[in-house]
Amino acid sequence: MTGSVPHWIDGARTTGSATRRASVFQPATGEVAREVVLADQSDVDGAVASAVKAAQDWGESSLSTRAKVMFEFRQLVKANRAELAEIITAEHGKVLSDAAGEVQRGLEVVEFACGIPHLLKGEHSEQVSRGVDAYSVRQPLGVVAGITPFNFPAMVPMWMFPLAIACGNAFILKPSERDPSTAVRLAELFQEAGLPDGVLNVLQGDAFAVNALLDHPDVAAASFVGSTPIAQHVYARGTAAGKRVQALGGAKNHMVVLPDADIDGAADAAVSAGFGSAGERCMAISVVVAVGDVADELVPAITSRMASLVTGPGTDPASQMGPLVTDVHRDRVQSYVDAGVASGATLVVDGRGYAPEGHEGGFWLAPTLFDNVDPSMSIYQDEIFGPVLCVVRVPTLDAAVRLVNANQYGNGTAIFTGDGLAAREYQRRVHVGMIGMNVPIPVPMAYYSFGGWKDSLFGDTHVHGADGVRFYTRTKAITQRWPRHHGVDLGFPTHT
Image (cartoon, rainbow, N blue to C red; front, side, top):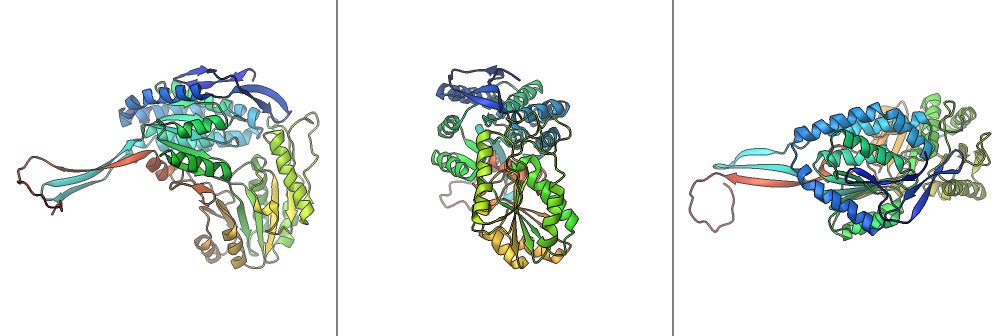
């Protein structure tokens, strides 16, 4: 891919009026592959104006029309999944199979949105008073925005815009400037599916575009996925401007392994969930909490599996893990490895200094494993967002629960055990939004909602599922009586 990545405004590619550009790298080589235009105020105003113009007619469209467009979009994304995966791999670096899986998980939300005629059913009560009926309806907000991260350039946007649009809103997507091309291709496919111009707009940009959208009076709501400091900023600035905001932040996901667990299964899960997509997942397992003496067997099992992992270019079918997204991010992750060594953790597997032959300029850090990590260390406290797995040893399940609950994040967690009572006790007591039992990455299906607790979520609703429908609509309650004269009554209406 060459050239500049454009905006998608009012159903067409445009470079807008901005003069600022940012580099889009090829992570496997370190080379600049493309540039992306960065929006200025006139570009933001243009995208919002396009959405405002489209929102009224689209909000009045029939549910069957919206469902038909969703079904067509689903088919087009499915047919072009390989192309979308190639775009993701080229700009993000993850291996092609991982990129294709990301598209598939996004498609599940599109499929959920295809059921919008059912999802927008209101409630109805007959004869709440003599001759009086009451019912409720859900109506769109108007123009809504989504601000999405680099690690899932297809899936996270598809958590948002299909459902928002199915609910009758117009949507402005601000993808990460690190891997911006997937969003434009998705918008093109949606237009091909029959979506009217202006209902979905893609605005390329950085922090300026984010703040401009949060401040804009014609944007009614904003969805965000990213780091906790930025999620706090988005929530505070958006709500201060009177907007509805859901902002999903960072994570430090713990995988608790009890002494009765299947060691081979737990080791497979820890490696898969810790190093998939180079650890650049908000649902990655970054801490293994080994209960009792299970670590004595578990750590060698994890180490042996890491020895056979193939880290290389995402386009190489033999690669199981690709590079990190930028050199700046790679250096940040590597600094945590340095800090872990300095603080006294046991470095079991060191991924520093690795580069596959012929790709020495890429943004590489091989899978890394620490044992005997203390909760006071920065490698435990902070979200590293890279292929660094930490093992913390605790004596009991109670100690494991206390450890997880004391952490500032509450996104996802998993427990590996054959003891159903222990697993039930853990899921009941732990202060985390998504829990897996012998499932290392408990991302819920599209008809449930995704989101954490504590500093992993700012706002009242999670994304997609029933919470997504609630977030992108507002409710009207209607009480009706058809003509019958009852005379004047200045008392408070009791409807008896």
